[in-house]
Length: 307
Image (cartoon, rainbow, N blue to C red; front, side, top):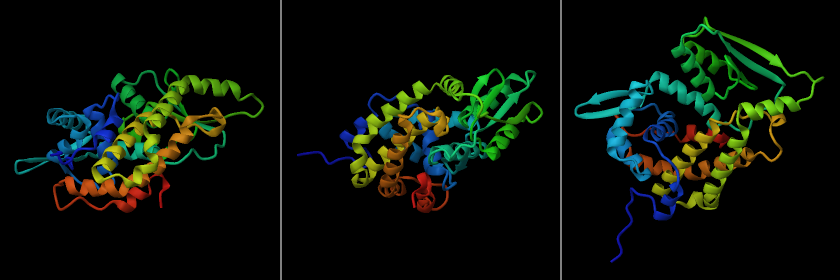
């Protein structure tokens, strides 16, 4: 007699999608909190997190260790109700995923006006402040063009201000605007961006993502709930991993055959196709501190500009 498929585990064919990937507990939980929890700020039971991580080969011990570390690093806030532990995003963690979400779920870069935002850090800033500032700015898409100097062609000034304030670096950072001059060739700037942002490596990462997920694009809307959740989470996880290395440069600074354009389009279409079934799975599996898992369909469909 054939064994009935486990409704909590993806089908073997879909599970093979993760083959060859190194899925760390910390990074996977950040993906889950950013994609699932952030649009409905609720605290999720630890047991539900363990259940959500299991299909990706991450056991309960690794989830417990990861939640402890992420809480210590001010990503998560823990709540105890009876004998159960619940985890939600901390204020700093929510700020981080909101900043990242603006890039992850956004569309193509807007038309560029040739202006740059430069962030220059004083040399006498404490090492801990410098490291935190650099880490947050890299996540925001800035590139280090020289020691103590970072640049972005289309920076979100509100997010930049929050990053500087969060690092308590207001007295150590100068923010300036620069413009490309039409009288000079753009080629050296293109070469500088290629080196600064390691665009060759980013292009290879986009191509690998396309090879992995594009064969499922046509059937994404027809997958059963557990498979849809698995593909959605893995898609966002890998897309986020590549995108946070990609500065989303203006068209004028990119190669003509840039694979990021195709990858963005594929991920946009697949995410929308996977939403309904994956949300059905989440509502059946996730337990929160109060009530049921909130309906975030309207908010989720705004991602990637889905109507």
